[in-house]
Image 1 (tube, rainbow over the protein chains, first blue to last red):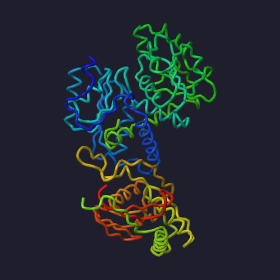
Image 2: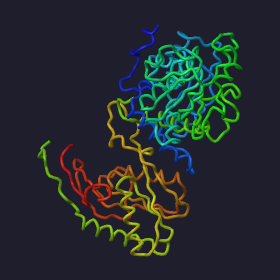
Image 3: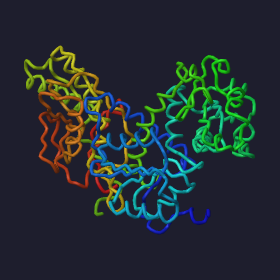
Image 4: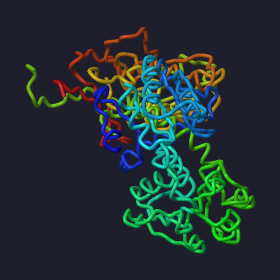
Length: 319
Length: 192
């Protein structure tokens, strides 16, 4: 299985770069991407909110899984850079992995895209895609594995709000086990010198994850020492399917819900969306001044502009 | 190739000459613009162009008693050698992108684009395109400290500090105290 999904070789063109995992990003690359993203902020203030940089390039988005933020912000990011965009969505019912994903990608590669943005429920789907297209591939979520642009925009948001990431203490609260957002963020935060504590019920924290350098706590009161409280989405569908990760959502909310009583002044709260208000986060916290959720969405646009720009015009051999 | 490996760079303009040249350029701008000088704006191209635009603004205040707004432009996103991959190499290495700032209205203004060296004209073309994304100036002019020839586009400077005939193998470098050790314009020879 893993052998099939590792290093692509077949159609890969020398020099083509991809963004598959936040684990592939070193600190200088992260710095470069965040600086670039910051330089795109000013564009939104201008009379013409578009740059000609990627004129004549084609960005293809293929989403085999539902998405609001990621797909819309990638599309707008590409358009702001004057690229042509094709966005494909799949309900997931007729699309299966393996041959079908391969055939879809081979078909779309015939259009000669420069970047393929892909989201798929299968771990390793983006890595697989690099075999069947000559384009640069961006992983926009592969199962519970990785979602690198989410972690970049989260880092960008933290840096904008706190002025730094180095030495910042981030508590990631909730369903770490199924979360590609958590996995991507842990790698990037540790690479950039932040302290990470995972907080949640033992059933939703992967065993042995301390080995990566994070702390683990099963007690919600431990979020008190954090600068950033990063709330993960409680995957309700999973609970309804009867999988007993937690006794009940109500029980989860009582023990691990992020409420204003559990926060102290000065902390900021983040959430990758979509929020389950009243489950992992209260309305009061979600709408408070401490919440950076709308900042995260805005950051998503400039960070994705930076990623597209960097993949097509960045220094050779990086990332 | 046949050039000696370590040819010392020739100083084309020293600090005093740069100062005199800029003063003359400022006078020329005042003469050109006449009455409409109060609608003037200077827009420098990063890095040395911005420094030169600031110096020109100071001189214009001194000579004509006008406060001329100064903007800064990074044209990285407007380059036409973007995304050249594989065999082709870029004319410029991937630069660090600096934030452009033009926080004054351009509509109806006379915008003077300022740069240190005018060469192929591609940077200026990119700068003109960038300026128009901020507004619609009445006129766009170009002022450069040095014109070294070898144009690849139909672009000509309105105000030139010094014409420097060069060969393509040579490089003209402008050093300014704000960004470098001292004020000087040097000619470097040989491939590097």
